[in-house]
Length: 400
Image (cartoon, rainbow, N blue to C red; front, side):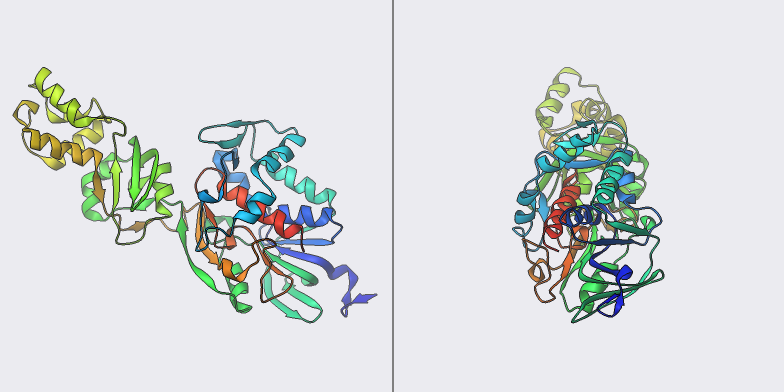
């Protein structure tokens, strides 16, 4: 009647905390191997981050996924899981379910229809694998003894041989996310790389907002650099500072006190263009001249900020070089980020030195696994974080 002194109904081979992308994948794979699986999800609805992702169409992977697209204190850690379950493997699963998809840009794959199709696919995989899902389960304590793990929740106590933590990070707290997984890691003595918001808009101080705050809504193709890292994508001015794909990407590398350098006219020889205009249209105002290369409102803001002669005819070569630098090498120091409220993911997490790269099992705690965003592996924008969820979930699911 009992196993480890507890009713069989409450004993499972595997308990997974969190029914997001990584947790659902792990549950399906473990269940397919004949393991009895219980998924505990604190939200009423599983996989909410999948549902809202990609504007409701879910950027579910990236054709170009490689270890180079991830940040971690150990950049090699993700290699094993990513090679064990690749983007092609997930695409094959999507196609088995007849879900139509398209490549949007830069290898980013989206559903033609709704992100709900990906959620339904994962839930069906879990159902076929007889994994039990309990939504709305609030967990109050986790413990371990010689028989395995005990999880205490408002739906009762559950026990298992293996425990998988797939609780994500604190990004987008309105989705129910929190730092709960870090608490479990800390409870068992595992090191944590300090978490911080990533893929997040950058903010300006009052002085910069006075200069550029009126540009909210202006978008421009740009190369945004921080140190030796650069991203060539769209940049968007906001009421708080800067956003857009290029800025979200660089935010994962930026730290407080650092400058970013922005080229707002990539691929354009702006200095040569301005000299040509000076010769052909000498009466033109600087703002008008710049508007031939960058958006009109941005051109006006830069011209007003720099000052100098109104007409381009009165600008020396040195002055045109100064204007060019303001557009092509705009050096700016953000004062922070918008934080977890708008961050797409969390940087940092459970230190990879504590985990097996092959199985995601904690080296010092047999049977305890960490997968997905809770681990110190963070992807670039564009479907890479979902692929880490699928790959890490698969790796743990093969071994729990």
